Amino acid sequence: MFKYSFLLLLILSLSGCESCGEPPPTPHKVAMEQIDREKKRAVTTALQVKAPTEKINRDRELIVAVPYLPEHLNPYIKISEWGYRIAMHNIYESLIDRDPATGKLVGALAESWEVEPGGTIFRFKLRPGLRWQDGRPLTVEDVIFSFQLLHVKKIELGPFYRDIDFSFKRIDKTEDGNVRIILSNPNAYFLDHLVEFPIIPSHVFYRGVSKKTRGSISPIGSGPYRLYQWIPREKIILVKNEYYWGSVPAVERIVFQAISDVSNAFVGIRRRQLGMLPRVSPVHYPAQITENIKKDYSLYSFVPPSFNYILWNTTDPKLADFRVRRALSMLVDTKSIIKKVFRGLATPCAGPFWTTSGLGRKDAKGWEFSPDKAKELLYQVGWRDTDGDKILDKGGVPFKIVMLVPVDSHKGRAVADIIRGDYQRAGIEMMIVPTDWNLFRKHLKKKSFTAAMLSWSGRPYEDFSPLFHSTGRYNYGVVYNVLIDKHLALMRRTESFKDMGPLSVKLEEMLESYLPMTFLFRPVELSLIHRRFKNVLPSPEGFRFARWQYDEEFIKTRPTEPVFDPSDAEKDKTAPSKAPAGKPRRRKPGMKAK
View 1: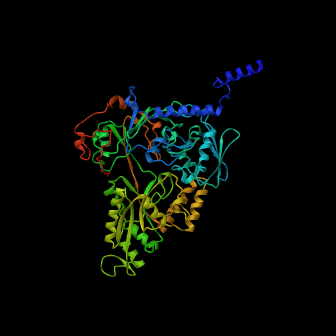
View 2: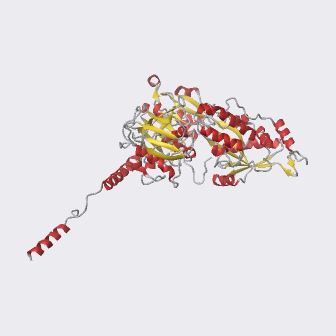
View 3: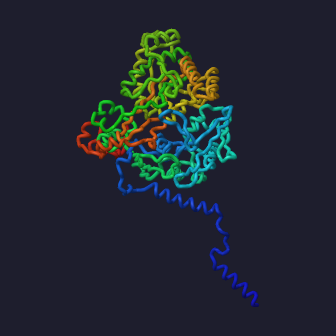
């Protein structure tokens, strides 16, 4: 009896203990709980409602006017232009980087690398002591994790995927604790395109990578700056990263201020409220760049590796003969377009390669504007005005072209209007059709178009196989040429960019003869940057703020405090007199952006 009573008492006592019968938490569970706590803390600190209250040294702060704030800050997935410029090379880094001063590849997270003979095996040695911005070590596993995500089909990859995804095969951890990347085939562009490939933390994105993942809203990278504050629709603030492996940035704090109205942004320049205006609008250039502004700001011009062009559908019976496409190219007055539409902020383009990189033809001028020679070519093909209606015809069919233009491209429409006038004087009727991009893309894929006005955002060393190869994903104009295909494959197998130079010249000559498109111009980016900053170098990836320095002599001799002049708004009739600089003008319901 006593035995059973003792057992009953023991059971009752154990049932009153809440955790006596539970095993201790596993290391995985402890880690997950820690990550959840970090998530709550990160979201709380990143999305502050009020501005910080500590006193800020304005001389050590850079305020950048941006037209909009991005949806997220994860360059690994599909991202907007300004999302990429804010996040990449500031918050996130790659294995290697490109020196904006020399254009040469330099080490970033990887201090050195080597390529084995054959061009398919790359070995990278990571820097010792790398850390993420939350203090955790950056390891080889994070690099392997970032590359293995390329095989996850559900992820909308960022701008790097065009040239890395198709050739990447496998990544391994070597015996010495570094990484080895194996490609499925030689790719001469691989190293250069790694500059765009961000290494992301596995402890943040192990559950998945998307726009709504916490790492996309509260990023944790390894770059020289970390996210300090994000006020939706207003500004994003970055501060220097105390765990950064490199030199401490001189610019301690960067504020990306959303100012959608270009006139408001320019008023901020007049009042010295901004440290940088990344793109000066043709509306303000050159007349409103006054001497007073030049005392405080320097102009930096840069021609990026991008170009605008007219794509011809070579399967269209009217455009099947290359002489017709050549005549249409000779009827485009590029110089007049640059002067009237862009006020000089563009430069003629005769080929796809960015000549600054040493590729392509530096002295190429393209087809000259010559209506007489163009008419002669069309006459040879059989296009003549047989009925006297001032429109060329052939076999009873009038020469009519439908030009697709993106509906939100106002400058594209202005360019098309000038081209239409020149075509009409030559006896060609052209209809401009502004088209929504989704419908635009459908027409391109189905080849149900005659001509389309497009732009290409490129890289210093671009592989144009997607655009010109017979199997290219962007070969909407149906470039089908065996010689061009073989030439593109040869360029990809080249081990040195120096050896690629003559090959790029040959490719441009082949394209000029085949003429699947008419190259128009490259945009010129003109930036205004306060003179207290020096060592400022534009690059294809944007400005590298971590490399900037301060001009102490200028700061001593020239006041940098913001000024307010009520007459500023009157000087620019396009600027609203009541709207404060730094905030976009509020639109009335139903009002559309111009």
